[in-house]
Length: 383
Image 1 (tube, rainbow, N blue to C red):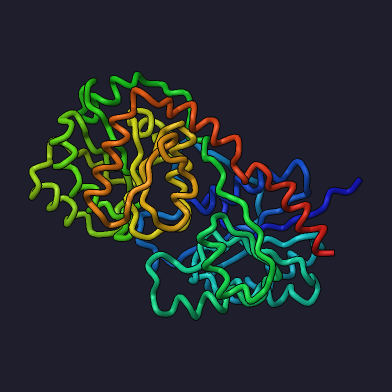
Image 2: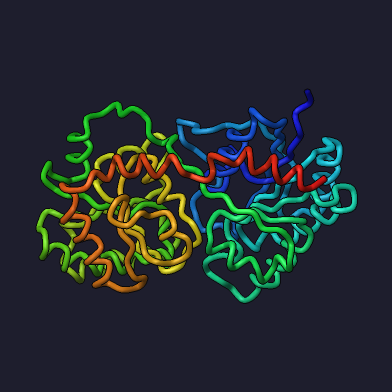
């Protein structure tokens, strides 16, 4: 029996970051049930628009390298027609676009418009975000442009489900979730005590982790401001900040200096290679997401992949993924005292609650695990 064919248009290795990893997880979970093709980018962001050091994954360890064809140049319209032609040649039962940033509005509009006539009711957009977290003026226009032609949408949180109503205009919206990113959880080749020591931590330090890109909407300044009160409560608490700064790092270092926290906060200012992620999560007992804006978060799902509890703010879909008192705590956004109280609740209950077991229980219900059945349903409803 012929497997139904799906073409996914989205970033994949050699690109790095959450979107490429997400597309790889989607490929992996669908490949046994469907004939899946991935069409990747030849250019994702022009270098002038990319704030980081590189868009390519330079890790020694490749987490997921899915087969893909690199065709799409995000700023070259000639490749958009070529991409649509390649999709038509596959004659798929479903075409999936990965959408996460309005920058891709023109390319997604053009490609999906060229496909719409021949693949009626077979174009699905997975919307990780609707509008970028920075919320620039032009974003709304580009989002309307990019989301004009899909027949249906698939969202990954209730928050995005609500926010896409402005653009879906009655088109069907399905819901799933981010996968649990457990592929970073490799067997360590070094003793955790040595890792702690190499980063300047003692065996008795209680390490809380902020991980990932540092941008204004991530609220790192709120977490730093919370540290004096946390240290007053428990002198062993230490903050480990790990990630590439897309904001100027100077203001954070100045904040740390001003609060006299240089020996209480360790900053690892770099994009972390895949093979290095485990050591930061493994030596930490709690992962904190003090975000001011969010949809869903790969950082949270990496934490769960390491069976770590979390403290998150009540923005976007973050709270949807937390079982309060069992897998973590939810606090007010942009509120120092609320963040302090949330972390204190974790410390108070760390020896009373089996957070690891509770996270494992929650993972069994992750909606992403049912994606093959959902995609089958979407294809059937397309005919």
